[in-house]
Amino acid sequence: MRKYGKNGQLESVVCNQCVKKIVVKEGIVREGAAMINHAWDYFSEKDGEVHHFDLCEACYDELVSQFRIPVDVEEQTELL
Image (cartoon, rainbow, N blue to C red):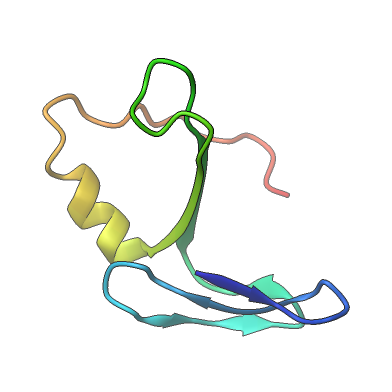
């Protein structure tokens, strides 16, 4: 869950799963976190809804460890 200030700058991020406060300094997330934004489409029961949530790195790891098909991971050659 992300909270933004009146100026549009990111103020806080909380993991939706475990409620851990994720470090944010000067509007930048300073530790591992996954931000999910998904717009559901015609063939779902959630057509027209957009879901937003955040997971800390530990909750992300726990979630994907349950997948029957592992997450496809590729190495970045340039880090931003």
